[in-house]
Image (cartoon, rainbow, N blue to C red; front, side, top):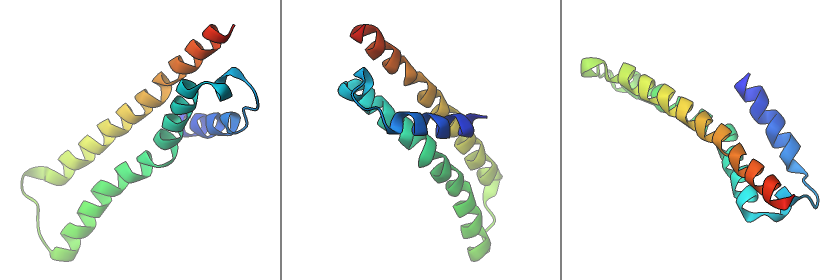
Length: 101
């Protein structure tokens, strides 16, 4: 669903040619933000709980109070926020398209 849409969006915006979106700094910034939100951030957000779990296993420490569960929950909410930002950047594209017409 969402990841497929992100990949399709990145492929679509990879070659803009001389369109209004290619000429607008705001649209180029929005495209860059979408690329970061879809390619780098989701992996990083999922590596945080995995890294914490690996550290806990390697040091034989038991975290108190369900910190691992809290970290996983925070990472999931950050991922939801990440894709919220991803979809909100399309408003910039619409604004540029309306201004160009």
